[in-house]
Image (cartoon, rainbow, N blue to C red; front, side, top):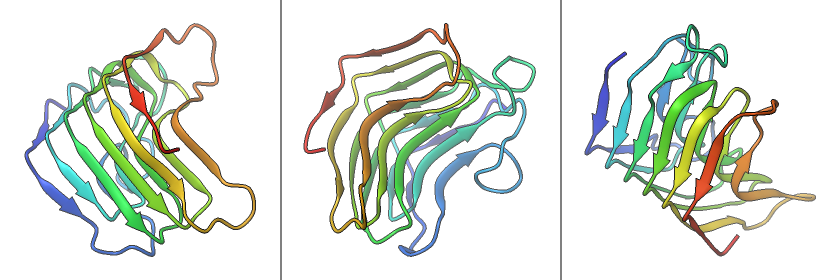
Length: 169
């Protein structure tokens, strides 16, 4: 709670297994964690990871969700053979902002997302992001490739997606 990750160069240095550049949630990367509130992730460069930035709360209400998450002015770039690739992944976040990030992902796998707003994302703004490449280089089967994916699993999520630039998807 009340943490800032700013001005870091982050890489997992491994391009064949799952890993997060920055993760906010439970004790195990990728697992839900309650009440990691008032987090700012700003001006970082993240490369060679399956997930660049991840934040997942336990519920879609303040008591277990991640309140006031700000992910802004980060650069996330992958060009690898990972098990997939999601530059920014959030779930069970409330009153949050994902803005002014630059994203470029090219991988040989089937699931590649620039920004993924998943279950329980509420009252969130996704704006002014530059997603310049989201590509599957040699997929097997039909790839899932999206610049921005909204999958909150609920009505009335109050998500604003505005002024983003997405190309080469």
